[in-house]
Length: 152
Image (cartoon, rainbow, N blue to C red; front, side, top):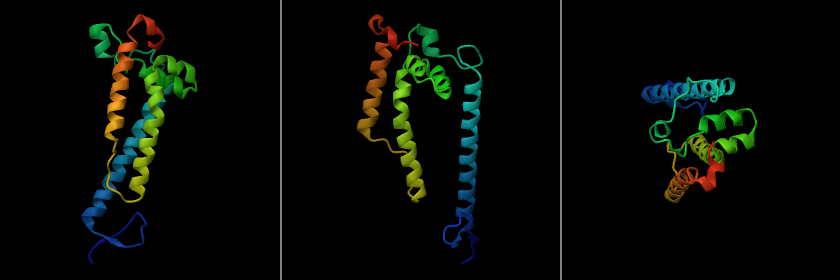
């Protein structure tokens, strides 16, 4: 077989050149994504969104004056990176509550990739609709005076 040796070390079998190039391109893209996430976390760790104005603003809040479900997410992530769970919950409880599920989905995706399954981040339909309903409810409640404790 006219192929390129498998550089990933899977059994030493030959891999067709196009497949080897695609794997190489995807691994570089994955590495680039990991580096970008690490850089974003470093910036967020070093520069508090409450004190620096180079972070993006919420257009929904700027236009309507109301808080969207994502308002306070950058501040919450900054607090989490510093280990302040209570302050992060105050900034955006929905984000903090959704992080374990995001981690579960990521681990499930990575485990599937390691087993050689196709790359698909599958969220069960019920889970998607439940999260959407929770986000809408959170967005509405945090704008009501009785639930002002949900506002950042």
